[in-house]
Amino acid sequence: MAEWDLVLAPLDESTFIARYLTADGARPALLCDLGELYLPALRRVGWEAASGDGGSPGEVSLRERLIPFLAFVTRTPESCWPAAAA
Image 1 (tube, helix red, strand yellow):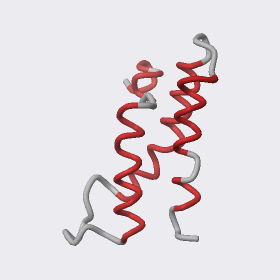
Image 2 (image 1 turned 45 degrees about the horizontal axis):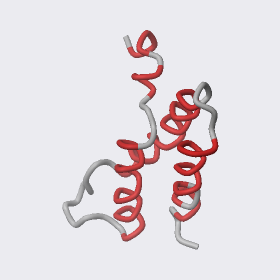
Image 3 (image 1 turned 60 degrees about the vertical axis):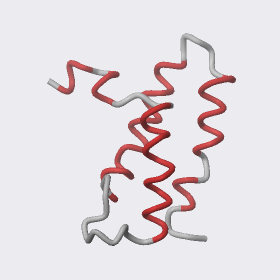
Image 4 (image 1 turned 180 degrees about the vertical axis):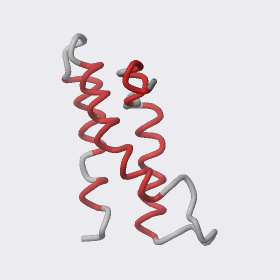
């Protein structure tokens, strides 16, 4: 199992649960929790590889999956708790 497989494994399931199995009233909190959970992984590998070579295959895969997940599925902690960001 690759280094990032455990991080990536639940993304599809989390998306399905958030969209189809979560009650409307609970969805915002779940989306915030998912954002808090996955944002540190993206911060760790960054938007781009530091060396300019794209990074390891695991890091490339992580970026390719995490960026759309964080952008289109989750909510950022700043959007969830704006007072905490100030």
